[in-house]
Image (cartoon, rainbow, N blue to C red):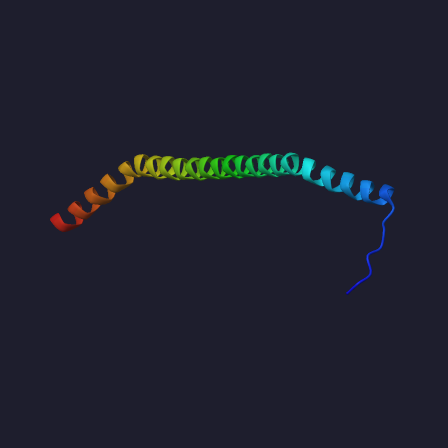
Length: 90
């Protein structure tokens, strides 16, 4: 069996105070971690929102370009049909 040794009361008081300090800081650290996680998640949400909006704008521009190309090609198509009909008539 070990021989009991006496410890200076100043040392035990310092250890007790340090333990109390760690226990007292735990809720604040937990809330800080929670707020940091929430802020990070919100940042990712906005980043994904911006990316989705950018993709929608690209799709809208591509659809507009296709529509304009079809509008401008109507005369060309009708001319080609007329030429084919004239060639088939002769």
